[in-house]
Length: 311
Image 1 (cartoon, rainbow, N blue to C red):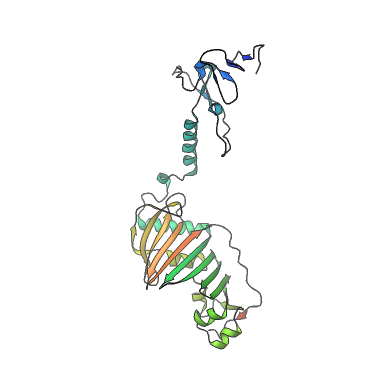
Image 2: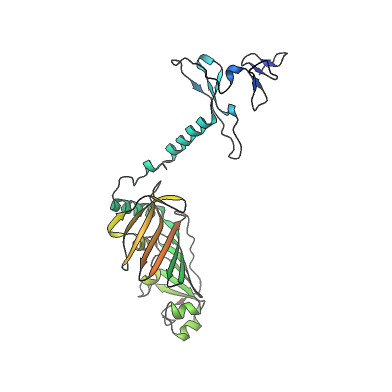
């Protein structure tokens, strides 16, 4: 800006010092005349167009000054200071409109329960992978299943008391590594087999009779079969799970269970949580990291399960 000898900018009437009654100082340490104060209503020609200057948004931990947004008056007139609240409102509206995360923009709005389940299954398959943590509680005991499941591969870690199992699926082969307690209790192995093959990898090809049960939920397709409600599906009222807006859908699950699958109410309709119960057990599964790469590598030197006398 070109300043005169008195420190006043003639173009916009800004001064380094007060010029009289009503002059006010802004956060830039400059003095402005009364007519430019934010609280003053400035009459403008409604027929004249307004031109908007580019605005740089402040950092999230800073406070925007009153002059952060400027709207030029008609015919190059003096700037009208825009309230920061109005700016935030406009920016917020724009973010919602661009992101598509407004509840009204959800692809499941107005869809029937079965249509939502179909959309959810499709979205999950498109994602290609997911991280799932399932906690089973029954009669004061609990077991935890942690899955990293992809389209044709997966990894599962099971912890139940002192029993620990890791299952890996790569291609057409499933691999199991279990401690002695898990081999004898969860897999009902003989005492000799449990001692001999504790903490060692065993392999099971897809042609074997044990493969299907071992690999269950390790591929995305088999996982979705276990968590997708069927039969008469009831749509529940919107709620919040882990800070996310969801809609629950209750129906039948494999094994004679009844479960509620909570689906994201905004954005892509992906599963967020599943709560199921049956036979005195309650299982809660949480879904996260949809689409994140699932790094699964086949272990070397695994012993064929049939050679180990499984189970």
